[in-house]
Length: 423
Ligand SMILES: Cc1ncc(COP(=O)(O)O)c(C=O)c1O
Image 1 (cartoon, rainbow, N blue to C red):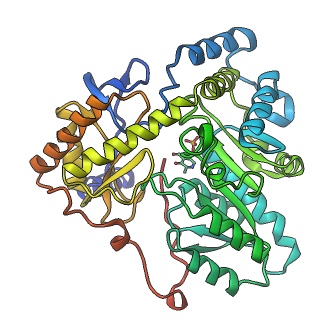
Image 2 (image 1 turned 60 degrees about the vertical axis):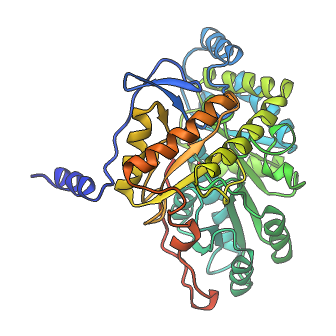
């Protein structure tokens, strides 16, 4: 047996083997999954814009007008009219002076975090310290690794622990980085307190609005806007492949920060520019969102209603305040069993297991869309409740997320090992 096969066997035995499921037809609130029609409850296409007629048309027109690909990186010959238009529209939407596109959210975080960590490095012999929430996305963790930056991992959303870390490293340049909406838990970072701490300690801030853009804040401008912090965060990262229904990502920031990122972010410099159809699709999606802010209200209303329905089935949903609702089961095999039972009954909510989430907190990560009907959500909550019982899991008996995470007095706590969260 080869080492590859041995490792795959190991993954199977530990309940962590993954395979890709197949969706035929376009993305929507209902899809055909491996040949079976299901209600889709785990997509990041929160506003249903991926298959919106105007978004599709814009992408198709762009392909005819500008071609399928950009052909080179942004700094060679890959910057095209549609990229500049989209960057201007995104900066206006996020209330920043400027913005710059990246190939994906993963690439944006990789580039932004590493570029900022290196920026601060020469000013101190020991370099900068990146302060990172323990549940930040894998792309942020990998950005820290790319910069070879010292990373202080603070307890999830714990501003006291963060403040303690900042004090311990008060003589070093600091960068605080956090998801705004946590992708596997659906809770929101304490952004006001984080920005205030950054101000007090002279640290820079990066906020990843992958799941906040289009979902939170006035007109879907994000959690930063909701907290009244527009213009007060050094770099806001947003993705175009989630609520905006296309593909790619951006960093919204000052003009000089944009210039710095263009000159130093390796994932921008050494990667082909986003394809024109994706950029045009995102631009059309942004226009639709701005013309129809009621979509955001609908998403919020659906999320609130669905959390109520799930609570009625006995699920513990109090941690989430957004469109992402984790149904924590605990054991990886059990989470997979609940997921499979739900699919058989016509509801698809993917099971998420380590290393995407901490050991012992495997879950169904449920994501609501603005295009779900209330009746669909009511029925889905009942289906999930039944699927859980059939698989041998009693809703409400799961491991509370906080209980499974590393804890301890800050004085005793070493930075947690870098954990790899996944998309
Ligand atoms: C918080 C967060 N940041 C970044 C990303 C990466 O974005 P993309 O899928 O565009 O690479 C994800 C993807 O799931 C995410 O959840």
